[in-house]
Image 1 (tube, one colour):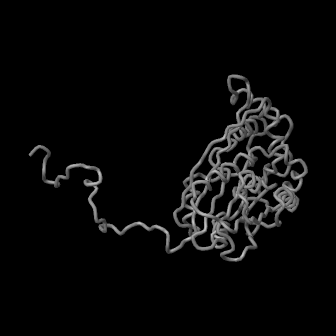
Image 2 (cartoon, rainbow, N blue to C red):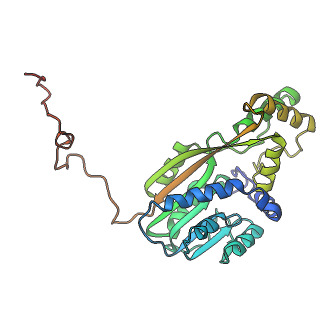
Length: 305
């Protein structure tokens, strides 16, 4: 994607993920939680998968979740960060490559299952990335991916905006724009997936101090990489005002600060002739009233006559 229409600075994202790889274990709680939830969904699928990819694997949380349940499948992992890919390879003792989610190196029909855990929200061309994932699937292959969306970090977003307005006279895009669950479902359909489904879960994390939230975001490699962000650092006085506002407005009864993470999960299948298809209008062979055990009346009839 050309620089003039790129929302995110992918080169900066790679550098920040590389930097985060050193102490990633201390901040990976959210990735581990969502990896377990992705694997939970596989238990509802009554079939075996023989070639699996984890796109945007971070340090191998999905692979470890699969192995932890005794599910050993041939797995190929990829991540934008070479250092995280290296960690993922060591974590599951399997292959991992450094690859951009926007330029996947996989041949068509390579996998019957593709998973992606909290990486696609940083992609500039999400429809294009989903199309590449769909093409990498064999017919009737399954994709399940999670991404941040909705009102993720709304508390931090509001506090920063209010502090900047009061102290600096304007606001800067300090947090990335995020997809809505309805938009995400439409993107799956646009990318050519069959039976597309998008749903959302909310994870609320609490902190004794909002500065610990910022430390976790840095440790995750999830800090601001919006291409048109302000290049100057946020002033300390503005940051402290934002942290104070979070303590005032977004704490629970125990005085702990809330941080919201909305997790959008995308599910879709590579099209195949064997998949169920909607019937043509008027092609039903049984009446709805028979299935419901109800009495059917014509439009000009009245009950009781």
